[in-house]
Image 1 (cartoon, rainbow, N blue to C red):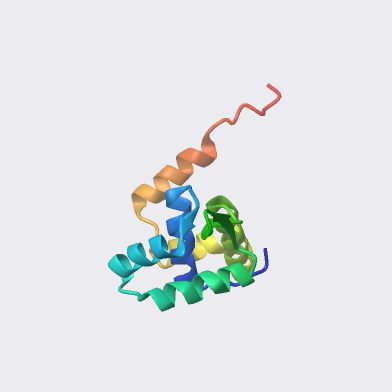
Image 2 (cartoon, rainbow, N blue to C red):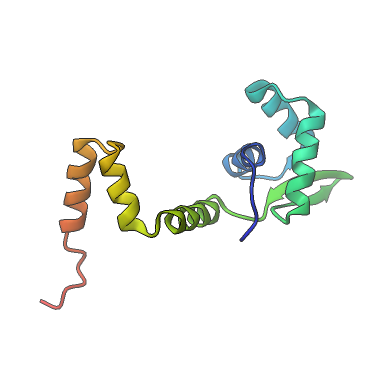
Length: 125
């Protein structure tokens, strides 16, 4: 998936992922009006953009379009992770930057040390 998803489009996807059922544009609009203050037109525009990008698909039921995501949250996270790692030149460089810039607490570092020292059961001993 080499499609750019805006923060606003991501909000639409997050609602669809959370609900785990097809939603009408009106249902999305109500939720996002309450959460973000968006009007119906804004929500409809974003849903249309997501549809045009192939990220949501309308399904008709009783003559009303309901939208489903065509990408899972896990797929999205994996793609964003890949992009982040590419920008930093790999996981090691990202980890070094996070430690240097104090984005990891001592507890985070201890947890990572424990994680990396765990035997994953793949050894041939």
